Image (cartoon, rainbow, N blue to C red; front, side):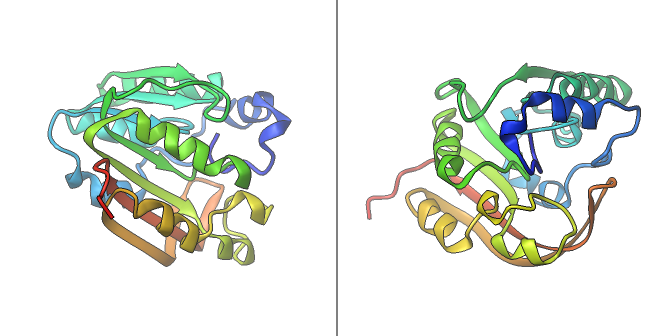
Amino acid sequence: MSDTTDYNAGVSNWNERYDSNDYVYGEEANLFIQKASHYIKEKSKLAAYAEGEGRNAVFLAKQGHIVSAYDYSQAGLRKTEALASKKGVQVQTIQADLIHDELPIETYNAAVMVFGHFPRKDQYNVLEKILRSLKDGGKLLLEVYEEEQIKYGTGGPKDQSWLYNANELLAWSKHYRLKHFFTGEVERIEGVFHQGRCSVIQLILEKVVEDN
């Protein structure tokens, strides 16, 4: 479900994109997830949301975490299972529409979402569902495209309303314990659809509601 330009076109578009032997976003985990994974305590029960073909889920499973990968596309989930088998780890796969489906409540120690994009009206409903799926003290690691990405053309939705506004995301995150927030330009070479400089938001927060 990540990197979609038209969510309402349906799951068939994502099944078609993932229906090949090649991993269209690559087999290596997102660089931010690789660098920030130390924020997740050892042997966590972890959810990877909008996980696509499983690159981040498999990376985290190799670190010893118990990982469930959620995605809209069955083809993506099958490739997640294949990549996990290739790398010698186990990842549970769960088909889910993050906008319309309910998620488990207070189940995971951590969650990651990389380039999970939704219409503006649904973005924070999805994020709140993800936070509710975390136990108290759980961590959320997030990298998404910022609105400025529309000028780059190096990946992500072509409709700006599907991108995230940095100020809005920062304001939302302050209801929790913010560990890391970055917005700006980075380099992402991830398969055939993420190629070059891009504008992202990176977020790490802990599910502890602040008093203020």
